[in-house]
Image 1 (cartoon, rainbow, N blue to C red):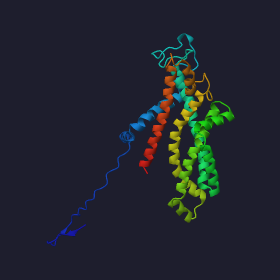
Image 2: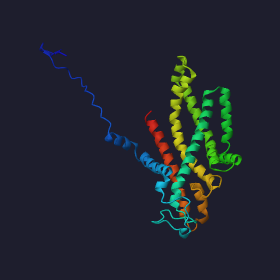
Image 3: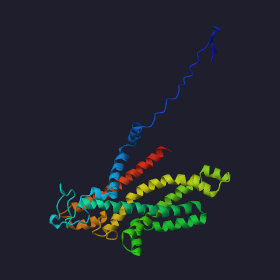
Image 4: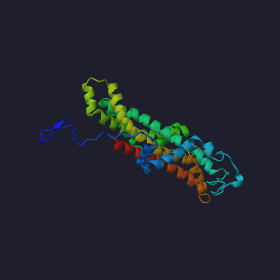
Length: 305
Protein backbone atom coordinates (compact mmCIF):
# COMPACT_ATOMS: atom_id res chain seq x y z
CA UNK A 1 0.00 0.00 0.00
CA UNK A 2 1.46 3.43 -1.03
CA UNK A 3 1.64 6.32 1.44
CA UNK A 4 2.90 9.97 1.04
CA UNK A 5 6.19 10.83 2.73
CA UNK A 6 5.60 13.90 4.94
CA UNK A 7 7.35 17.13 3.69
CA UNK A 8 8.49 15.65 0.31
CA UNK A 9 5.32 15.08 -1.69
CA UNK A 10 6.75 11.74 -2.78
CA UNK A 11 4.95 8.48 -2.38
CA UNK A 12 6.46 5.55 -0.55
CA UNK A 13 5.79 2.13 -1.95
CA UNK A 14 6.88 0.40 1.23
CA UNK A 15 4.09 -0.94 3.41
CA UNK A 16 4.07 0.56 6.88
CA UNK A 17 5.27 -1.58 9.73
CA UNK A 18 2.26 -2.22 11.94
CA UNK A 19 4.23 -4.27 14.43
CA UNK A 20 2.33 -7.42 13.54
CA UNK A 21 4.04 -10.63 12.60
CA UNK A 22 2.89 -13.66 10.71
CA UNK A 23 1.74 -16.43 13.01
CA UNK A 24 4.28 -19.10 13.65
CA UNK A 25 3.78 -22.40 11.89
CA UNK A 26 2.11 -24.93 14.19
CA UNK A 27 4.42 -27.56 15.48
CA UNK A 28 3.41 -30.99 14.25
CA UNK A 29 2.70 -33.41 17.07
CA UNK A 30 5.40 -35.97 17.52
CA UNK A 31 7.44 -37.79 20.15
CA UNK A 32 8.82 -34.49 21.48
CA UNK A 33 5.34 -32.99 21.82
CA UNK A 34 4.04 -36.07 23.61
CA UNK A 35 7.06 -36.06 25.90
CA UNK A 36 6.47 -32.39 26.79
CA UNK A 37 2.82 -33.07 27.58
CA UNK A 38 3.83 -35.93 29.85
CA UNK A 39 6.42 -33.77 31.61
CA UNK A 40 3.79 -31.10 32.25
CA UNK A 41 1.74 -33.66 34.18
CA UNK A 42 4.51 -33.86 36.78
CA UNK A 43 5.62 -36.69 39.06
CA UNK A 44 2.48 -36.35 41.19
CA UNK A 45 0.56 -37.97 38.32
CA UNK A 46 3.24 -39.95 36.49
CA UNK A 47 4.52 -41.88 39.53
CA UNK A 48 1.07 -43.01 40.76
CA UNK A 49 0.08 -43.81 37.17
CA UNK A 50 3.15 -46.04 36.83
CA UNK A 51 2.36 -47.84 40.09
CA UNK A 52 -1.26 -48.26 39.02
CA UNK A 53 -0.11 -49.71 35.70
CA UNK A 54 1.91 -52.33 37.58
CA UNK A 55 -1.09 -53.21 39.77
CA UNK A 56 -3.35 -53.48 36.72
CA UNK A 57 -0.78 -55.72 35.01
CA UNK A 58 -0.67 -57.93 38.11
CA UNK A 59 -4.47 -58.18 38.03
CA UNK A 60 -4.62 -58.84 34.29
CA UNK A 61 -1.78 -61.35 33.87
CA UNK A 62 -0.94 -62.79 37.31
CA UNK A 63 0.19 -66.11 35.83
CA UNK A 64 2.96 -64.34 33.91
CA UNK A 65 4.29 -62.30 36.84
CA UNK A 66 3.90 -64.85 39.66
CA UNK A 67 6.49 -67.65 39.89
CA UNK A 68 3.93 -70.19 41.17
CA UNK A 69 0.23 -70.69 41.78
CA UNK A 70 -1.43 -68.96 44.72
CA UNK A 71 -2.51 -72.27 46.29
CA UNK A 72 0.64 -74.30 45.58
CA UNK A 73 1.84 -75.66 48.94
CA UNK A 74 5.33 -76.78 49.91
CA UNK A 75 5.35 -77.52 53.67
CA UNK A 76 9.12 -78.11 53.70
CA UNK A 77 9.76 -74.38 53.18
CA UNK A 78 7.04 -73.04 55.49
CA UNK A 79 7.79 -69.66 57.14
CA UNK A 80 10.77 -69.00 54.91
CA UNK A 81 11.72 -65.31 55.28
CA UNK A 82 11.95 -63.06 52.21
CA UNK A 83 14.92 -63.92 50.03
CA UNK A 84 16.05 -64.77 46.50
CA UNK A 85 13.98 -67.93 46.24
CA UNK A 86 10.84 -66.37 47.70
CA UNK A 87 10.88 -62.58 47.42
CA UNK A 88 8.08 -62.07 49.95
CA UNK A 89 8.72 -65.25 51.93
CA UNK A 90 6.32 -68.15 52.45
CA UNK A 91 3.36 -68.74 54.76
CA UNK A 92 2.54 -71.54 57.21
CA UNK A 93 1.77 -73.94 54.35
CA UNK A 94 4.83 -73.08 52.28
CA UNK A 95 2.84 -71.02 49.76
CA UNK A 96 4.78 -68.24 48.05
CA UNK A 97 3.54 -64.92 49.44
CA UNK A 98 4.69 -62.97 46.37
CA UNK A 99 2.57 -65.18 44.12
CA UNK A 100 -0.42 -64.80 46.42
CA UNK A 101 -0.03 -61.01 46.52
CA UNK A 102 0.14 -60.88 42.71
CA UNK A 103 -2.95 -63.06 42.32
CA UNK A 104 -4.71 -61.12 45.08
CA UNK A 105 -4.46 -57.92 43.04
CA UNK A 106 -7.21 -59.16 40.72
CA UNK A 107 -9.71 -59.77 43.53
CA UNK A 108 -8.96 -56.57 45.42
CA UNK A 109 -8.92 -54.25 42.41
CA UNK A 110 -11.98 -55.89 40.85
CA UNK A 111 -13.96 -55.51 44.09
CA UNK A 112 -12.87 -51.87 44.34
CA UNK A 113 -13.84 -51.05 40.75
CA UNK A 114 -17.17 -52.89 40.80
CA UNK A 115 -18.14 -51.43 44.18
CA UNK A 116 -17.38 -47.93 42.88
CA UNK A 117 -19.45 -48.57 39.75
CA UNK A 118 -22.38 -49.76 41.88
CA UNK A 119 -22.08 -46.79 44.23
CA UNK A 120 -21.87 -44.23 41.43
CA UNK A 121 -24.70 -45.89 39.51
CA UNK A 122 -27.08 -45.74 42.47
CA UNK A 123 -25.87 -42.24 43.36
CA UNK A 124 -26.37 -40.95 39.82
CA UNK A 125 -29.99 -42.11 39.79
CA UNK A 126 -30.74 -40.63 43.25
CA UNK A 127 -28.83 -37.41 42.59
CA UNK A 128 -30.46 -36.88 39.20
CA UNK A 129 -33.94 -37.51 40.63
CA UNK A 130 -33.33 -35.01 43.42
CA UNK A 131 -31.70 -32.40 41.19
CA UNK A 132 -34.07 -32.62 38.21
CA UNK A 133 -37.32 -33.63 39.87
CA UNK A 134 -39.97 -31.64 41.65
CA UNK A 135 -39.51 -30.10 45.06
CA UNK A 136 -41.47 -32.95 46.63
CA UNK A 137 -39.22 -35.55 45.00
CA UNK A 138 -36.11 -33.60 45.97
CA UNK A 139 -37.35 -33.40 49.56
CA UNK A 140 -38.06 -37.14 49.70
CA UNK A 141 -34.70 -38.19 48.20
CA UNK A 142 -32.79 -35.75 50.42
CA UNK A 143 -34.47 -37.07 53.58
CA UNK A 144 -33.73 -40.64 52.50
CA UNK A 145 -30.05 -39.77 52.02
CA UNK A 146 -29.95 -38.13 55.44
CA UNK A 147 -31.27 -41.33 57.02
CA UNK A 148 -28.49 -43.30 55.30
CA UNK A 149 -25.95 -40.71 56.47
CA UNK A 150 -26.95 -41.53 60.05
CA UNK A 151 -24.99 -44.79 59.62
CA UNK A 152 -21.21 -44.68 59.15
CA UNK A 153 -20.21 -46.10 55.77
CA UNK A 154 -18.59 -49.27 57.08
CA UNK A 155 -21.44 -49.88 59.51
CA UNK A 156 -23.92 -49.57 56.65
CA UNK A 157 -21.89 -52.14 54.70
CA UNK A 158 -21.98 -54.48 57.70
CA UNK A 159 -25.75 -54.05 57.87
CA UNK A 160 -26.11 -55.00 54.19
CA UNK A 161 -23.88 -58.08 54.67
CA UNK A 162 -25.94 -59.09 57.72
CA UNK A 163 -29.04 -59.07 55.53
CA UNK A 164 -27.55 -60.66 52.40
CA UNK A 165 -24.94 -62.92 54.00
CA UNK A 166 -21.12 -62.90 53.74
CA UNK A 167 -19.22 -63.46 50.51
CA UNK A 168 -17.27 -61.65 47.82
CA UNK A 169 -20.35 -60.66 45.82
CA UNK A 170 -22.27 -59.36 48.82
CA UNK A 171 -19.17 -57.50 50.03
CA UNK A 172 -18.90 -55.76 46.66
CA UNK A 173 -22.59 -54.81 46.72
CA UNK A 174 -22.40 -53.72 50.37
CA UNK A 175 -19.40 -51.46 49.82
CA UNK A 176 -21.01 -49.98 46.71
CA UNK A 177 -24.29 -49.21 48.49
CA UNK A 178 -22.50 -47.77 51.51
CA UNK A 179 -20.64 -45.23 49.34
CA UNK A 180 -23.74 -44.22 47.34
CA UNK A 181 -25.21 -41.62 49.79
CA UNK A 182 -22.09 -39.44 49.73
CA UNK A 183 -21.83 -39.60 45.95
CA UNK A 184 -25.57 -38.87 45.56
CA UNK A 185 -25.36 -35.69 47.61
CA UNK A 186 -22.44 -34.41 45.52
CA UNK A 187 -24.19 -35.26 42.25
CA UNK A 188 -27.41 -33.58 43.40
CA UNK A 189 -25.48 -30.41 44.24
CA UNK A 190 -23.75 -30.41 40.84
CA UNK A 191 -27.02 -31.05 38.96
CA UNK A 192 -28.77 -28.20 40.80
CA UNK A 193 -25.87 -25.85 40.06
CA UNK A 194 -26.03 -26.62 36.34
CA UNK A 195 -29.82 -26.59 36.28
CA UNK A 196 -29.97 -22.99 37.55
CA UNK A 197 -27.15 -21.72 35.34
CA UNK A 198 -27.63 -19.04 32.71
CA UNK A 199 -27.17 -21.23 29.65
CA UNK A 200 -29.77 -23.73 30.83
CA UNK A 201 -32.26 -20.91 31.43
CA UNK A 202 -31.46 -19.59 27.94
CA UNK A 203 -32.19 -23.03 26.47
CA UNK A 204 -35.53 -23.08 28.28
CA UNK A 205 -36.41 -19.67 26.85
CA UNK A 206 -35.55 -20.99 23.37
CA UNK A 207 -38.05 -23.81 23.87
CA UNK A 208 -35.53 -26.64 24.11
CA UNK A 209 -36.86 -29.93 25.44
CA UNK A 210 -35.93 -31.37 28.82
CA UNK A 211 -34.02 -34.27 27.24
CA UNK A 212 -32.03 -31.85 25.05
CA UNK A 213 -31.00 -29.86 28.13
CA UNK A 214 -30.06 -33.01 30.03
CA UNK A 215 -28.05 -34.37 27.09
CA UNK A 216 -26.33 -31.15 26.01
CA UNK A 217 -25.82 -29.29 29.29
CA UNK A 218 -26.31 -31.33 32.43
CA UNK A 219 -24.63 -34.63 31.55
CA UNK A 220 -21.40 -33.08 30.15
CA UNK A 221 -21.03 -30.85 33.23
CA UNK A 222 -21.69 -33.71 35.67
CA UNK A 223 -19.39 -36.18 33.86
CA UNK A 224 -16.13 -34.50 34.94
CA UNK A 225 -16.95 -34.55 38.70
CA UNK A 226 -18.10 -38.15 38.30
CA UNK A 227 -14.69 -39.07 36.86
CA UNK A 228 -12.96 -37.55 39.88
CA UNK A 229 -15.35 -39.26 42.29
CA UNK A 230 -14.80 -42.61 40.59
CA UNK A 231 -11.01 -42.32 40.78
CA UNK A 232 -11.07 -41.30 44.44
CA UNK A 233 -13.71 -43.89 45.32
CA UNK A 234 -11.77 -46.93 44.07
CA UNK A 235 -9.13 -46.57 46.78
CA UNK A 236 -11.76 -46.16 49.49
CA UNK A 237 -13.65 -49.20 48.21
CA UNK A 238 -10.48 -51.33 48.24
CA UNK A 239 -9.79 -50.39 51.87
CA UNK A 240 -13.36 -51.09 52.96
CA UNK A 241 -13.53 -54.41 51.11
CA UNK A 242 -10.20 -55.46 52.64
CA UNK A 243 -11.52 -54.50 56.08
CA UNK A 244 -14.59 -56.67 55.62
CA UNK A 245 -12.45 -59.57 54.39
CA UNK A 246 -10.19 -59.09 57.42
CA UNK A 247 -13.29 -59.54 59.59
CA UNK A 248 -14.15 -62.75 57.72
CA UNK A 249 -17.16 -61.26 55.88
CA UNK A 250 -15.63 -61.13 52.40
CA UNK A 251 -13.16 -63.46 50.73
CA UNK A 252 -12.23 -66.39 52.93
CA UNK A 253 -8.93 -68.29 53.21
CA UNK A 254 -7.20 -69.70 51.27
CA UNK A 255 -8.40 -67.26 48.58
CA UNK A 256 -5.54 -64.86 47.68
CA UNK A 257 -7.26 -61.61 48.64
CA UNK A 258 -5.26 -58.93 50.46
CA UNK A 259 -7.68 -58.45 53.36
CA UNK A 260 -8.02 -62.20 53.85
CA UNK A 261 -4.23 -62.58 53.77
CA UNK A 262 -3.94 -59.91 56.47
CA UNK A 263 -6.45 -61.73 58.64
CA UNK A 264 -4.60 -65.03 58.26
CA UNK A 265 -1.15 -63.49 58.77
CA UNK A 266 -2.00 -61.75 62.05
CA UNK A 267 -1.93 -65.16 63.76
CA UNK A 268 1.81 -65.43 63.01
CA UNK A 269 2.82 -61.78 63.18
CA UNK A 270 5.25 -62.46 66.02
CA UNK A 271 7.56 -64.76 64.00
CA UNK A 272 6.50 -64.13 60.36
CA UNK A 273 6.04 -60.37 59.90
CA UNK A 274 6.07 -60.65 56.10
CA UNK A 275 2.67 -62.37 56.06
CA UNK A 276 1.00 -59.08 57.03
CA UNK A 277 3.46 -56.43 55.86
CA UNK A 278 3.34 -57.13 52.13
CA UNK A 279 -0.45 -57.48 51.74
CA UNK A 280 -0.88 -54.40 53.92
CA UNK A 281 1.58 -52.43 51.79
CA UNK A 282 -0.37 -53.40 48.67
CA UNK A 283 -3.62 -52.14 50.19
CA UNK A 284 -2.03 -48.85 51.23
CA UNK A 285 -0.23 -48.47 47.90
CA UNK A 286 -3.33 -49.09 45.79
CA UNK A 287 -5.48 -46.73 47.89
CA UNK A 288 -2.84 -43.99 47.90
CA UNK A 289 -2.20 -44.37 44.17
CA UNK A 290 -5.83 -44.02 43.12
CA UNK A 291 -6.31 -41.12 45.54
CA UNK A 292 -3.30 -39.23 44.16
CA UNK A 293 -4.48 -39.82 40.60
CA UNK A 294 -7.94 -38.58 41.54
CA UNK A 295 -6.54 -35.38 43.04
CA UNK A 296 -4.35 -34.93 39.96
CA UNK A 297 -7.34 -35.33 37.64
CA UNK A 298 -9.30 -32.86 39.74
CA UNK A 299 -6.47 -30.30 39.60
CA UNK A 300 -6.06 -30.81 35.84
CA UNK A 301 -9.78 -30.22 35.23
CA UNK A 302 -9.70 -27.01 37.30
CA UNK A 303 -6.70 -25.68 35.39
CA UNK A 304 -8.33 -26.34 32.01
CA UNK A 305 -11.69 -24.74 32.73
